[in-house]
Structure formats: structure tokens, C-alpha cells
Length: 136
Image (cartoon, rainbow, N blue to C red; front, side):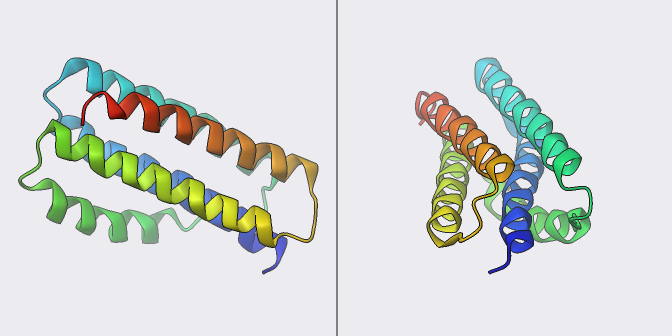
């Protein structure tokens, strides 16, 4: 994989998290869970902005991700309750951490900015996996 593809993977992970939260937050009844989700969304958005600032030439196919994830979330979210939503978000965050770890293990180019961005993404994701556990 080329470095741009790894950066795209990071962008994809952030977009998937943002879109999932956007589509699920209104289905949540628990106010504190909703607050956790909104905070995670803000942190992901801030990091996504930083990625685009550092790598402005990397394409962000937000529309494709939005359409793909919307259909998945709607199918799973139709009969969801807060516990199922927390589980779905935790699993998505965990999968994103695994994907980024895989990218790190395969990277040949040690771009310090990119490594910092991946670390930040993993830290945010792990933090919210822990916070979401309270709602399972």
C-alpha cells in the first residue's frame, strides 16, 4: 500500500464514525449516552480537519461512505435501543482501531505527522470504547 492509501484508510475510519454517530444520535434515549456520542463526533471531526490540513491532496469520498453506512445503520438501527447502539458504535470503533494498527504494521514510510494522527485516532477511539461500555 502507498502512504496515500493509509491516509485514506484513516479518513475512511473517521468518516464512518462521524456518519454512524450522525445517524444514531437521534435514536438514543439516554441523555448521557447522547452526550458521549456528540463528544466523540466532535473529536473525530477535529481530527478529520487536521488530516485534511496536513494532507489536502487526499480525496475524501464522503458521499460514497455516507451512502454505504446509511443503509447499514438504518437496517441495524430500525429496532435498536440504547444498548444496541452503544454496542454498534463500540464495535465500529474497535474495528477502526484494528484497521489502523494493521496499517501501522504494514507501513514502510515513517511519516511522523501521519503516525501522530493515527495515534490520536486510536486514543480517541479507545477512550470512547471505554465510555460506551457503560451503556452495554
